Image (cartoon, rainbow, N blue to C red; front, side):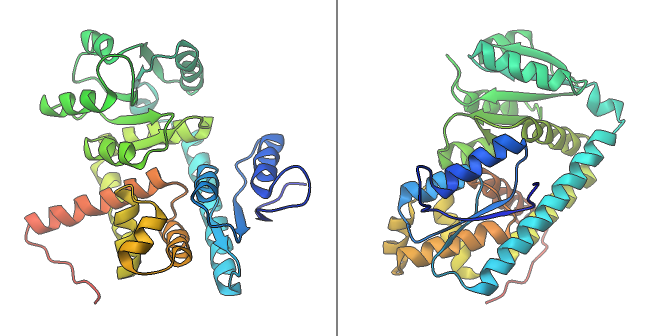
Length: 312
């Protein structure tokens, strides 16, 4: 059986819950199957666990229209992901495939694993155990991409990005981290990283992140199309959802957001699920990437004197 989507209750009879079942099924089938969790448990830990596995969470009692909307959106995202992956496999662009990927991470085993993944896709790879070692060997102007850990020994990954930007170097970068802390993702992308991915991540995820970073650096039209798409996603949110999104990206937990806005925690969780669905975000870092891309376009329009009407 090869399911297209899994809809599971969180609390199942037996030794494992619905989220654990989804994780095991994905591993068994070697596929990132779209999945939705239904639950009456709105604890912070449950929401964090569900988000970590990239599953939208629908709180009981879920309305039929909401369930259908989420199912339809996930299946559409899956079709787009398959199409993007097929296009990526067919790409014969030497500019991208012969690019150098710099990997900075303290873990020798991790660097060897990433090297194998990237070299199997015809990238050239140079890896370093620290930011200092990378800087000693790095020559600006290369067609390359940087994969840097957030917390290597010595200089932090964020400081490395700031240093490159201060020197006028627009080397495309993807930050990697074993932490799901929202502030790290937001700060990384404000510092110029094109993406933020959490360990552990799959082969396709890292390859797509690298390919996207390289494409945007080589093709301004593709970067523009991406920012326009991000802006459209954010514009689809209601005013309340924009408020909640901003507070989520600032690192506030749902309980604090509920108190600040004078609404229930369940309402906040429902809005969070809707925000993730409407922006096609599978994780908080992905949401941060979309929000920052939309904000950068809005800022550029303001500087150039272009005004975008907003709904009241």
